[in-house]
Amino acid sequence: MFEKYIDDIQSKHNNGVITAGSVHSPQSANIAKVAEFHKVKCITCVGGTKPENLDNHHMMRLTKHYGCEIKIVAGHGMSNVIHARERELAKENGYMVIEQGELLEKNPSEMFYATADQVENIPDELDNLVVASGVGIQLMGILLGLKKFNKKVKRIHSICVGPTREKHMKRYENELLKSQDGMVWDKPESLNLNEFTMLAHKSPYGKGHDYMVNNSYIDDIYEGKAYQWMLENVDTANEKTLFWCVGKRPRPEDVDYIIENGL
Image (cartoon, rainbow, N blue to C red; front, side):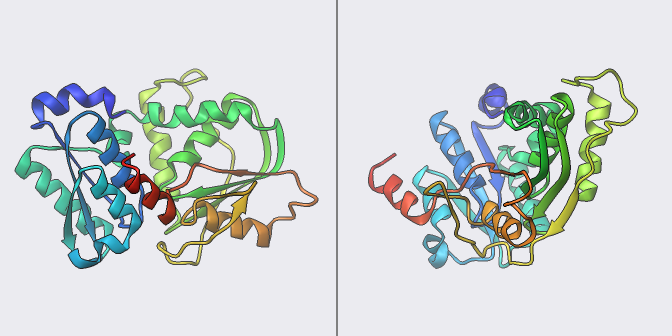
C-alpha cells in the first residue's frame, strides 16, 4: 500500500510521511522501515512516555534505528489526542498521514481481500476459530474469506486487545457495500457474513502474555492474550479449533540483534 502512494509522497508531500501509535505497537517501526527503503522522511507521534524513557521501549529503539523521528505529543497514551496532534503536524510540514486507518479509508477492499484470500488455506469445517483483534481489520478480511471459500465455522471468537469493535465492523461492511471493489458476489444488500462474538481481554494493552507455539514465540500483545483466552475457554482437545496468527512484533532480543547487525 505504501508503494501505491510513493509518487504522491515524493511530489505532493515533501517526500515525507507521518504516522502515530502506541510505544508498544509495531506500526511506527513498520512504516519507518518502508520509508527508509524508499528514502522518504518519516515522523511518528506517540504519547505516554518521556524522552529519557524512549529507549526502554524496544519498538521505539527499532523505529529510531530505521531513521524515523519520534515526537512525544502527549503525556498520556490516549489515541484520539495523539492522532489529532499527528494531523496538525501533517498540515504543518505537508507530510502524508500513513497508517492502517488512513489506508483503509482510501482503499478498503484491498486491505480486506488481502486477508480474505488467505482463508482458502484453512480447513473446510471448524468448531472454533479464534482471532486476536485490534480494530477488526483482520477479522473483517477473515469473514469475507469464509464466505468467498464457503468455509463452515460454528463459532468465531474475536478476542479484542482494547475495546470491542462492533461499530468498526459495521462501518467496514458499509464501506465494502458502497465500493463493490473485489466483491465475489453480485451487488448484495448485505454481506451476510458469519456471526461472531467479540470479547475484550481484561489485561492492559501493554502487558504481554508469553506463549510459544511450535518452538516459536507468538506475539505477546495480541496473539498471546487471545491464545491464553483460548486455552482457558475452548475445549481444543475435543473441538476442531483454529487459532489465527496474524504475525508478531519483534521481541526485545530480536530488536537488539537487528540493531547490532545493522539490518
